[in-house]
Amino acid sequence: MPNHKTFLAGILFVANVTVTGAMAADRISYGTTSLKSVHYTYAVSAAKAINTYSGDNVAVTVISTGGAVDNLKRLSRGQIKMGLGTYSTIYQAYKGIGKFEGKPQSKLRGLWVYATALQAWVVRKDSDIKTLSELDGKKFTPGQRGSATEQLVIQMLEALNITPDLYRTSLSDAIAAVKDNRSSGYVKAGGAAALDGTTLELRSFTPIRVLSFNPDQVRAVNDRFPFIRFTTLKQDEIEGIPETTSPMQVIGQFAYNDSLTDDQVVAILTGIIDGKKIQEAAFPDIKKIDIIQTSLEMMTIPLHAGAVKFYRSRGAVVPDHLIPPEMK
Image 1: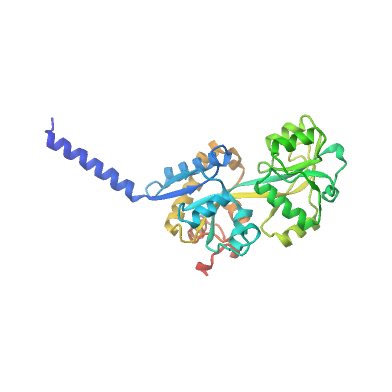
Image 2 (image 1 turned 180 degrees about the horizontal axis):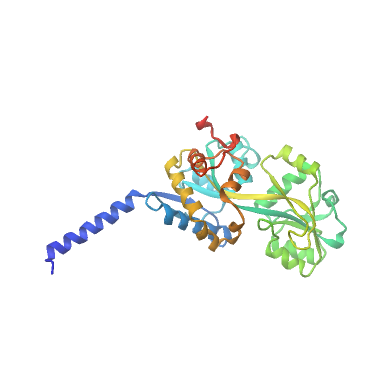
């Protein structure tokens, strides 16, 4: 049996190795969103994937926040190293437009995209509204009051010169108004190619129509707001819905060019790509996408230099518009 001094020395040696190992991993604070959001659940799984596959290099800690705008503020104050948000918001902050007019955050860089949420423009089928222009003068909710959806929809309506009688309210009130025929419809983001649960529930009681953007309307929106992405769903890709072109809300992670090092970003993305199954367990929609391909197709601001290096190391061709100024 070892004597007391030998035993104590062994404990101290193990403790020292543990502490040294923990100190070797760079601590990364990750601003996310509300605890009740499914996107917070995703963020926790993303952090788990990173810490599982790259824990020797980085240790990610998830912080619940108020979402994209709050994360931008925290990033600028050095309170977090990276954040989560909609890329429509991030692009506007990067360019200094919209709510960020005259205050561009040119240091913003993209990391990865994990969700493309279909933005469905829903109306009652018996409203006889078949096109976007027929929303003119009709009572319509542009998205839950205060949401990123609401902001985007109002911007698109202005670009298209369509002026509904906006009924700005909560999602539950908007749906109740459609059920009671007090409102023609509303806008709500869902899954990658799916209506959200509240809209599916509404459809079981009230026949609905999903409005489609025609090519001229897509061009008109993109002329004003090039950061807004669109997708076209095939007939019955959503059961009972004809071929439809709708906006997409792109959701992902961002950082400053100097809030994370290139090596830290490579370690983070290694965990995200190699640990995809961990994320799928918490956020099933991610099964439908190739994270690298989706990120390179949907990103609206330059990538972090570390992300460029990582994606190239995995055989991807990074488009020129995603190469950050510091790599040119």
